[in-house]
Figure 1 (cartoon, protein in one colour):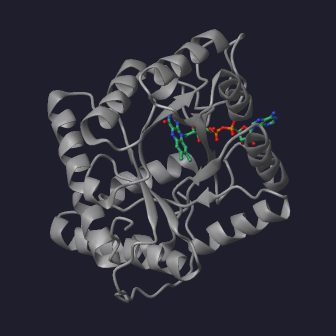
Figure 2 (figure 1 turned 120 degrees about the vertical axis):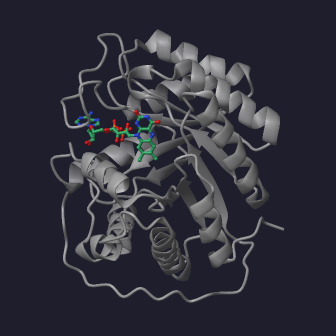
Figure 3 (figure 1 turned 90 degrees about the vertical axis):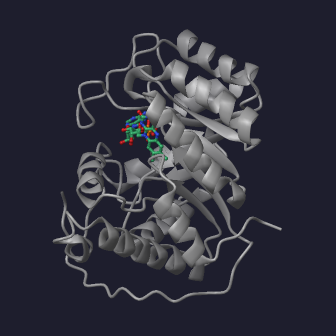
Amino acid sequence: MTVTNNASPVVTRLRPARRDVSVSFEFFPPKSDDMEARFWESLDRLAHLRPRFVSVTYGAGGTTRERTLRMVTQVKAKSGIDAAAHLTCVGASRDEVDAVVRSYALVGVNRIVALRGDPPTGIGEKFEPHPDGYRNAAELVAGIRKLGDFDISVAAYPEKHPQSPDWDADIDNLKRKIDAGANRAITQMFFENADYWRFIERARKAGITAPIVPGIQPIHNFKQIAGFAARCGTSIPDWLAARFEGLENDPVTHERVAAELAVRQVNELLDSGVREFHFYTLNRADLLLSLTQLLGLKAAA
Ligand code: FAD
């Protein structure tokens, strides 16, 4: 885990309700009946916010192909909310990936989050594309564009993708994805808004004009999120770790602190003009509901 030293006060300022903010929610495909029940319960509780879309992730190496397809199909059918299916290039030929894209289109899902994905051996390992496969997300976006009129999101990294040798390479890569036809980028989770703004500045300087939607990760469980963060190259600042110190066995206080910190992060971004957010839900509604209530977010009129 990377640790930084920025001291940062936590003060929630409550604002009037607002209907000018658009949200999307990310879920993962459930593995069991219990998890599936929680998925639907959470979606049900968040539906009143009328998200722009709900996205469902794609397991490493396509391991959740059928489940992702089933969940995105049902999200649309059961809730009427637009669904976005994540898709990676891992371990599959172009023909196989194209077949998955067509299967999404067949069930009426025309939003795709297009990703390279990580090797099954681990996130930090060298990515070896399938010999007949898409080699990266930019190639995948170009491939999807050839298959139909899809709304395509791609990934962006406010702290740089761990495998990009430098910032120029990272921003060039995002530009290639947008130039290949992506409509927007969604960021990896980040906890220092300054990282997001520096990233936006770099991207705009490079001529990227597409929306770069901040991906917000409410901290349901600090230990778990710190583990994810370490694996995907997101820093956990010292001040953030300190806020959760000693709360391992105190879920009530943990949730209060998590809501407070997420409110503060989103409020700062709102104050700076951001009007679109992507929330990583981990299939849970509780903390997100506290957050959206405290923020006063309402469905668009
Ligand atoms: P790319 O944009 O292809 O880039 C990966 C790396 O390769 C970068 O460092 C880039 O600079 C470099 N690179 C790309 N092309 C070239 C080139 N031509 N020459 C040299 N270098 C190059 N993972 C999943 O498995 N399933 C999911 O559902 C999923 N959802 C995600 C959703 C979001 C919003 C985000 C931010 C990430 C998600 N991920 C998911 C994780 C993602 O798969 C990993 O971060 C992966 O390591 C990179 O994917 P990418 O699409 O950003 O890759």
